[in-house]
Image (cartoon, rainbow, N blue to C red):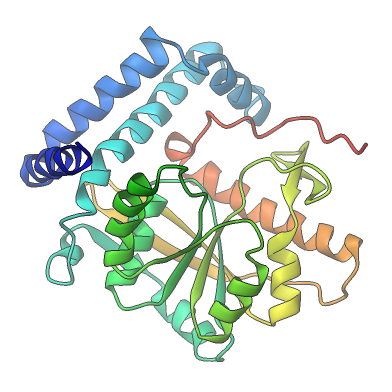
Length: 291
C-alpha cells in the first residue's frame, strides 16, 4: 500500500511539474478558496494578524491581502511537485539568485553561515535550489511519526543535497555542521515563548521570539546573513541575500534579546516588501507570559 501511494504521488507530481504554470496556479487558487473562503480555516487569525501589522488598513483590503497570502500558500503546496524532478540540469529554469557573493564571502571564513530567514515565498524550494547550486545546506525540521512518510518527504529533499536535523538536542549537530562549512537555515518568524523565547516586538507589537539563533551565532562565531525568497511575476523563485547582521558578543540574556530584536526588525522589513507572500495564518502575536 505504501509503495502504491508513493508511485501514485510520484505520477501526479510529474504531471503537475511538466504541466503548464497556469494549471498549478489555478489549483493553488482553488486550495486557497477552500481554505480561506469556504472552510474559513484560521481566517480570523489571518485578518487579526493583518490588523495588528497594518492597523490603518481597511477590512476589505485585509481580506484581499489575506486571500492573496493563502493563494501563495496554496501554490506553494502544489509546487512541492518540483522536488522529485529538480536536478542540476534544470534547476536554473526555476530559480534566480541575488547577491550570492555575500554568502560566499561569509562561508570563506571557514565557520559556516547562519541564514536568518522567514516563511516568505517558498523557502523549502529555495533551500533545494541552493543545494543544487552546490551550497552545503542544513535545515532544522520536525519529523513525522510515520517512518515511511519521513523517508518519502525528507528523502526527496535530501536527494537534492539538503541535510535535515530534528529540533530536539540540535545544538551539537548544528555546531558540527557549521564547523564543516554548512549554511544553516533558521526561520525566525514564528512565536516562541519562554524559556526558549525572549520578549521582543514585531511590527511594533510585543511577542516572543526564539533566542537560539543569537546564542548559536555567539557560540560558533559564524556570520548571520539575512535572506528571503519570493515568487516573481514570471513565477521564478528569487532567493535574495541581503546583508550580514550585527550580533552582540556578550553572553547574557539582554544581549541575546537585543540581537534577536534586530533580527525581528530585519524580517519585518522583508514582510513589508512582499506582504502577500508571508504566512499570516500563524499566531505570531501570542501573549508572552513568564511563569
